Length: 564
Image 1 (cartoon, one colour):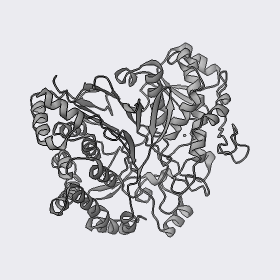
Image 2 (cartoon, one colour):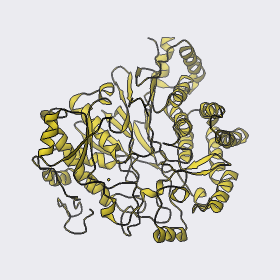
Image 3 (cartoon, rainbow, N blue to C red):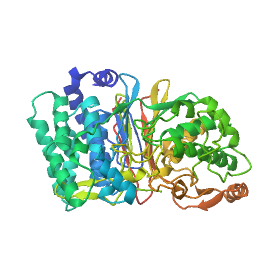
């Protein structure tokens, strides 16, 4: 048995898939799955996500022989029910995948666009982008993201991965469960009735949602409910498969999504911080907190000035992430004083600050998902959708409100245009060492997501903080940024609060030191944001996962263990 498992682990041959499934079920049924808790380790795969039902859905799929993509898709669909209010079926889910066979990271662009019709865009410029309700919806993208990833990188059918979610919906705990279950079963029906291979069947199921009778019913709902999306927007939606954006830091390769997310702001922060000896400062010392905060202020100023949908705007990302630009910008960090200015740089002219046209920040609905399988494939995704949702009751489909992450400041890189995708805060992370995955993270928490992700990453790289400790350590966040959920046309009104810094928890001497440098300190009594973090031990093949674990909104992990 051990020989067969070694063959499966390191080769993953489809010819022995039936044996793999049988052996996995033996392991699963004889108790080698760990209990769901806030930390877990195993050599047969781990799931770190949201509520117990969704983590169990992912573990069930891994135990049945599914890979990380199969497991993650099961988790994400399940989160649309178990974590409703932080994510919904009509939401969005940036999805990163490390493929152990190719050694490459791919990004499935998990964001939908706004309406393509110019008259709809004109309405927003005349009336403003609402922050809630159906008019704030973009094209529902999570279904497409999941089914595209499942088709291209998964091994299971949609019917298999959706089974845990249908079981949850069949509990009929909420009135809308039955209608959503019926909608999902329509996709299963299409998959069953389509002639062709697994991939073709999944593609047809996806098309029924975006081009068939489900799209027709959504179109009628949009028209009669005052929404501005139309079937044409659904039909034209594509889940783009992209290369990640990455930088090297202290021998690690950190991968993020492109500038349709805020992900590159973490990479910019790393390039700035490469010019400082953080380790010598000591973990969570006043110098450490101050330096990271000031670097983030600079990186976020560039985010707010330059980032947008790269299919619509030319973002000078290569320059923004260059060592030369970081060397020019890093001297702006004054070790004695907290900056009270918004200071974007000029990557075109390689100047530390822009001379003219400067732009003068929110925890919303978001959940998390990280899955590692026994073959070493990794998925990090950040599903989200902010309420108040626009709900098509007949289909049980709630819609996101992500259009409010665009603005109506004409000429801004993140301004509303027909068919444009908003620059969102959702930002999964996969980190490689020697070309193999060593860390995967997902964080819920709006604009603070990459701030917390940065701190977890620095804690790991600079101080060796493993997930179980890292998710419980003190954290901080600066409000010296724009609010990514404020669609105002006036940049100054999008700001949170200059100089404000939340911190949890630390000693009074550190607080006093930071105040003396000019930080406006607010001590909070809860950990900031809600991360999940997985460390993959490249030597042993064991993955170690840990999650945010407050009594409310806690997240869970589980692992499979293959006996030696």
